[in-house]
Length: 330
Image (cartoon, rainbow, N blue to C red; front, side, top):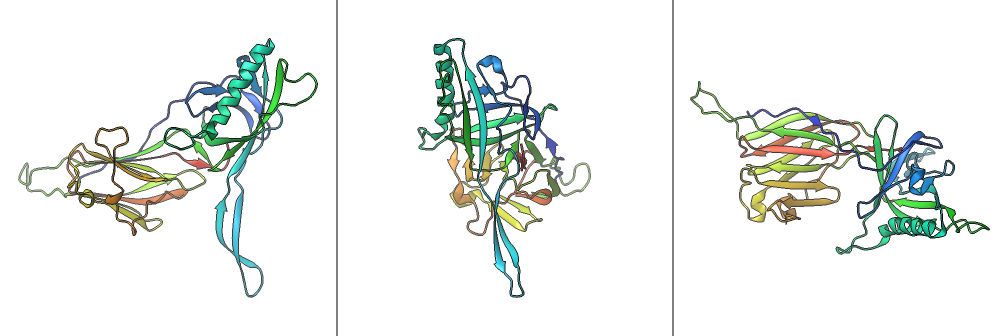
């Protein structure tokens, strides 16, 4: 049976921005920055750029809010049936200033555009969120995707709006959980096949069949991305902890076996399957999955027993699983 490699953790690369840590109520010293939909980074903790986060008023960095659904019990009380995490709203106060009115107003306009840009549709018709990132003194970073909701209005009192003003941004988050910046990567690759008679009679399986434990150290379910590298005729991934499984068969889209070096990328949330043919977005292979019985499963918090199986595999066959842990707090 081919051997498969052990999991490894791949560190991410910190983005630019940041600056001198500032006190944020309730969470200690931190450095924060905002990345707008164009990829431009806006430091929020460095007063030298012409704006900074106010020391009071930051909120929404704690645990997510939940809606609980319960069933009344005949002997009194109720039993919890379902838990639904709700979107969160982050309040982030900023003070903006300039040496002259013109310098102040240019910074004011630029920041307003950077945040409200999250509400504009792109060429694909979709709205792209910005990303708020909070880094701790030990270098760990957690991020959350945000849409501007309200608050870029100014104080509206005597003296404000000339060379300085303050805002209290309301940033709405579809997903209430904070994602760790460091991706976790699990790599599995087939061992070298061998000749039946060299150096002595032996058998190599035509499957990459491995059971392993994948640890999700976060607070919430994560939805990984899979990259499968051929050769393979059929791929099955099973999460024995949850009982969910899905199968991908290239023949179901008329492709035939996945050749050596060919890759398929499966995103579990939102669901997306792409055969990498060299084009920017690849070819839609959603039909290669065993719908409707297949479940593009996630990894529950803690240890998950996972089985990777590739039928018709060879020495170059490999599977890569990548996810970012999700957390209740920043």
